[in-house]
Image (cartoon, rainbow, N blue to C red):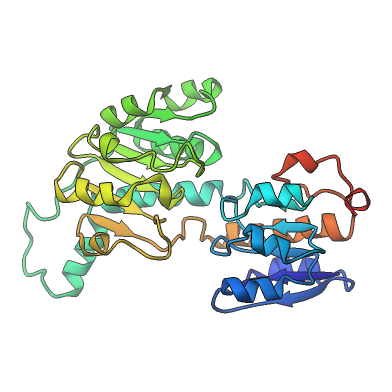
Length: 332
């Protein structure tokens, strides 16, 4: 049985897989595979561990007649044609949960770095512009007791609320498309509101939602204009949640004070105007880039593969739950 791994992952996952000599590992490292290279590489495999930039389209899935499992090395799975995978009875599994603290910490770090102008001040020092102390230099807000609006109140959003409220006594407003999470409201001084009310009343807005048809361009020109002129926008979710053209306009026209983005609408391409702006911080999709998170992701992806190829059962972290009662033999 053959497994394709499209990119280098931590050794912890490889070591799990190497315990099963019956799994033949095609381990690719370096630059991403092109669509044609991926189609060729997946032809004879029974399982694949892709990463987010790998677009597992209908054409890719149909090119792999023996495919049983797509065990993505990510929490998100919007890069996978889930409908086609399910129709072909291909399990899709992800690596949820263990990114929670890492992504929330990154969002919080971006908030502090943006508001306190850390990146801009660092460049100022490195370029030799620091000649004397100036009491008006790089002024930013104090975040204690301010309002943080969290769009998407799942595990990551709730952990961010915990950090912000527990550390800075921030008031928490949140919007979630599925439900209000009343059991955590008292603990974090959190209030469930509409997205419009959240944008109007938050000093910082953090996007922590999944990408779906409902959240695509959730933050658009109209909604950006609801925000406070001294507000900050943080995105560690998915790039297309924001209409980047509208964001560029909002920043140029001082509709909001700044933005910090870990993800981009046409990733890895970044809007050229965002690159030029001093009130924008950009990071290359590294919100989950802690050693702890990435190692655990590798283990979870490997365990999903073992579940299917060795144990002949659905993976623990199954996404297309319609296939949850299936066994491998019943899918053949």
